[in-house]
Amino acid sequence: MKPELYMNPQNQTSAAANGAPAAAADPQAGPALIPPPGASPGTGPDAAGGAPAAFAAVRFVLVETSHPGNVGAVARAMKTMGFGAAPGSLVLVSPREPAVRGHPDAIAMASGADDVLAGAVIVESIEAALAGTAYAVALTARQREFGPPRLLPRDAVAQAGARIAAQHAAAPAAAGAHVAFVFGNERFGLPNEVVDRCSAVTHIPANPAYTSLNLAQAVQLVAYEMRLALLEVRATPLAEIGYAGEPATAEQIEAMFGHLQAGLEAIGFLDPASPKKLMPRLRRLLARTGLEREEVNILRGIAKHMLVATQGAGARAPAKQEK
Image (tube, rainbow, N blue to C red; front, side, top):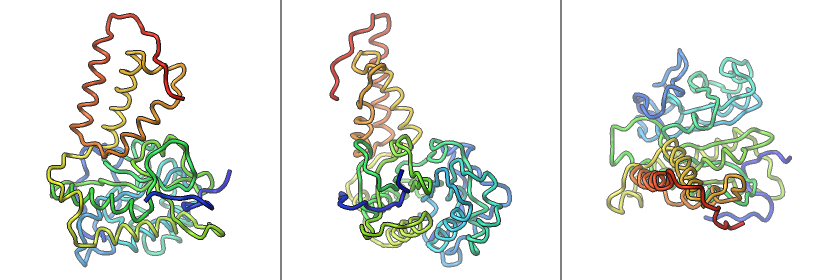
């Protein structure tokens, strides 16, 4: 399998800081994202300069990272762009080295970003890593038949920045991360089940003749683009369209998909023995909408009534599904 290089393979096309004192942890994020003892949440690189609090709304997630040095280098990349001061800004999903925060290679490669490294949170699942977020972007160059919408990095960070601005306009005191960027293992990249839980996919459109970019470099480029988006003072599209509801969190959306799948199975539309691509197609469709909490509740209400309507009735023959 080819290494995950976070950029475009040849002939691929694509559709188109933090410095404020750390806020209290988002209660929706759950206990999995409590920072380790000794973390210093208020020492980000822009702390003295009073950079926008919106930087605290960005989370960087590394999935099954192999080399401790890469984790340290990512901490350095984040800090140079103003990220990492808020608790939970860097989340590690099942790193190969469990004690990576204190590993000599990680500390050496952090090169002064020891506070970001020490404040990294280690979790065991992508669900825990994305807890509390409303918009997640997977970094992968691998073509997939199904999956979230594919955007260029600048478009992806523009979407993320607009969502942060809209959230802060609606609830200025809201704490915790609202968006996340998800990076895979250095060699194998991101598995499909992780990508499916994200709202969008992006890659870095590098030279197709030499697409060699390591993990920390990919994080650096995304963090740079995200920094520019957050520092740019302008009205965002989402802030101009009038009413915008509260974005649904990753865990609310996952619960909705489980409920919806159960309802579709109950009415015989989804055959669990031969599901084909129905649920991936639904994930892709709904990922384009930017679901709000009330919209998720509507879909769960529909699923609930599917289940209620079929209680006591015999199982129906599965409907014909698209291949």
